[in-house]
Length: 251
Image (cartoon, rainbow, N blue to C red; front, side, top):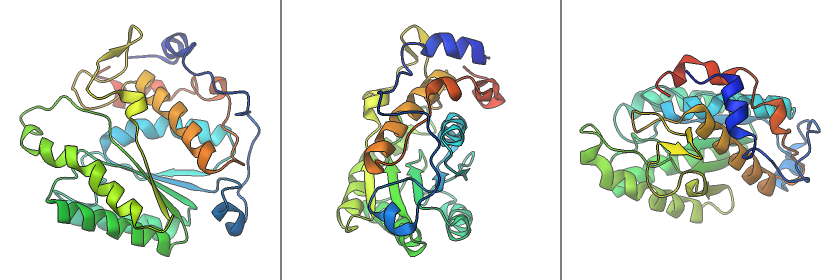
């Protein structure tokens, strides 16, 4: 299993943020300021088991930056369309209503199967629930996978979901954005990057290095959306112990 020490060595050149991204703690700002993009309030993070791994360094990073964070990412779930989505939706909608977050980040899941209309309806339902709670919706594309027999029949549906999600964002009147994580993962599954395990051997999940690279990227994207947000220095979160979690056992 990858240890925190190993992670630090592997990320020494990767986790360098710009000078503008200081480690100053940021407290929640009033709702009107948040809507203007001044600061970053509470973040609610959702998605499938890939997102479970992403949530670990993201929590460490936002905690270090003084931003409240809650993850409802779920093993084998977290989807708003596709198999068992009715059950997942009860948990997701309930959490959105109770969390009182200012930003809801949904990483598109590897279970977002269905027709184009079904996918669109699922993302619209999510958008409505998020905006009803006074929050902004941030949709993030999932990393490319190496499909096995379980996923192979659904690859066309999964390939289509970013475009469907964008169509929902385009009609959201600025209440939602879609972030393309291709800058992190590339266009196809890559097991190693810079000589280190970046993705799990199962072809689906991320390893600590990949999860940390994703966190670094997402913090920078959130900084663009909320200029008053100051991401913590990676030294404060990259070695916070999360990389030893059993979730990364196949790395």
